[in-house]
Picture 1 (tube, protein in one colour):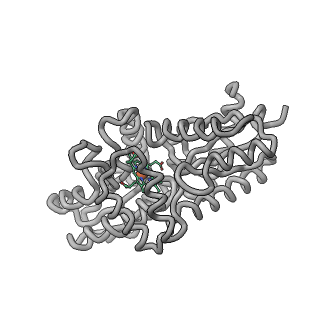
Picture 2 (tube, helix red, strand yellow):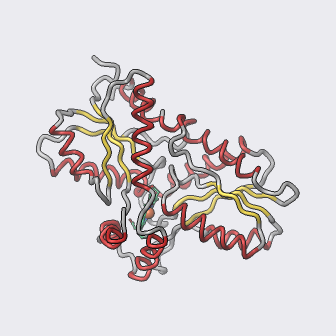
Picture 3 (tube, protein in one colour):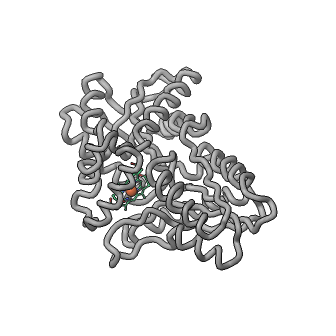
Length: 311
Ligand SMILES: CC1=C(CCC(=O)O)c2cc3nc(cc4[nH]c(cc5[nH]c(cc1n2)c(C)c5CCC(=O)O)c(CCC(=O)O)c4C)C(CCC(=O)O)=C3C
Ligand SMILES: [Fe+2]
């Protein structure tokens, strides 16, 4: 048996995003099909993409992460092909599964670009994988690798990034670490696990990056109809509150994301940064793990452990 046991491929699974202005509406339709997102919200989010030429950074980031994973495999003598497929945009998961099948892949491990439990972060990706497999006769078995939010490969890069972001702030101010994650409906399946994991990651990163600096965990990028309750507070409202409490400098750490995709680039770097500016607060945004070698090593570590555990 090879070092990877029964696995003969890794599948990188992500969200997908538009790669030009004409892609924006079809992409948003893919994301929101059957989910009851109000038209106004879609138009607003479409404008965020158009501010960046209709291009989401996420696909380029997936290509870079795939290359980093391949480099990590090569450096550790793990001879496995790496495939990439998305939920909402080209390369679609079903097309990738078709290619894997044609290449003779029998059993793949899936690494999802979301670190947490819960429906949006985890179970929905499993559904997507199973739907893609159902479209392809003879499709390989595909096991989603375990949730990795508490693994050092995910948390350690955030510790360094949080320190660096705090270092960018004026030293004499009343500083605060503000952790953010994507909001989800309170009624979403798995929401309590998602929140419990976020609280643990925030606490761990805060304690290690800056003991004694106060911190909070808040949410961003709320969608859905206003009548539906989602996780709160929103990061922008939270900045208002911190300002009222006398905080003069914030380091925002997006622990809910693995790379700087549109939610980070718009909702934090444009919207939250603008609000902080209006309030006269110093603002720094911590980097996400992306191609940090510790993060790029996670697929290999998880795959080998999962195999060792009988996977
Ligand atoms: C928890 C979570 C993550 C983190 C986990 C993960 O990373 O997967 C995440 C990631 C992402 N969300 C993304 C984009 C969007 N999400 C939307 C809508 C929604 N997100 C939700 C949750 C999450 N989303 C939910 C509950 C909805 C409501 C509709 C539904 O129940 O499905 C909409 C519709 C418009 C809007 O209302 O915002 C868009 C365009 C992109 C791509 C960004 C880019 O292009 O760079 C990424 C990585
Ligand atoms: Fe989303």
